[in-house]
Length: 425
Ligand code: GLC
Image (cartoon, rainbow, N blue to C red; front, top):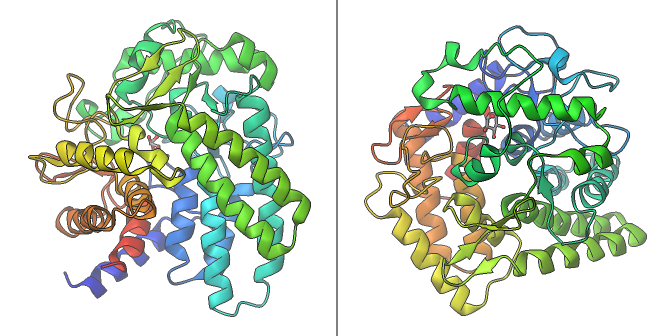
């Protein structure tokens, strides 16, 4: 297919997954609005329809809680093809949502959409950006208060699903401590849509639902959850995305003339950068997350170790080390960057977050490399991603050893990644 035909195909996937101003990640497997998917999708929309890009973010904010949290799923309309649905979460927002969150790509997307709107001379750009900026600021305050109450400069996830890398081997040790007992009856739907060999194992699913049960019993109160959480990991991927989104909000605060907000955001930004700086491990050539329950570093190699590049300016030695390490992960792969490297015992090229390549992760890694002046490697990763989509379609993820497209097909954020990265060629 020509590039133009591919772009048309990407547009039609976004149109097909549109449910009225918001986009489902893919039909049936994920039939609601997902937090970070929508942020990436908004950037994709901004390449051809800025009004629709704003709508995506505005509809996500309909799910924002009074305490500032932006949930990981907003259940705008019922569907029986997904588990766990609103009844299991038992939250009490105006519209049904899940009770956990996801990486705050929102602030990054907002800056992008704002700049596209200004470039297009959109009349209501400033008013729309201003409203979404306030929502983003409230969510960043929530992050620091609810998820870094001890002031480490690192924000914690209380559920693997919050990380966006649901089934990552990085969580294995911490998750193994979580009991498999549940008060909720488990009715998995995912394995009816895609092959079970690509999805999390049953035992892990029980632990995922155990955590939901615990937090529901805490009435979703952030303080009670923090105290009772059987899973608590200060995640470098999450912290890095929050730090980068904070930098983008600082930029927007300047543009909007919001001086007080800018000073507050600048303080948050310093805190997060300090926290990230302490997570660099020269012996591993990457950043590592911290298990807050055991107090141990999580050294298991995953893509998360490279995501801090979107926020941190590396020194020359760090940059050379990261580049060499990424090259090592790419070695022998048909498509990189794998979510876990082949040399790791946890590597499974087809199973969810244990090896496969995600287009949006490559997008973040490439952005981080470019920010750190590793232009050639950034470009290579972008090109590999674009070719993977051209060869295998707009799949959820790709087998790094063969390039085969896996998981759900006709995926919104893969279409968005294609639209954005395809133009950088
Ligand atoms: C899976 C992914 C998560 C994503 C969701 C919808 O749960 O792990 O990152 O947001 O699917 O695409």
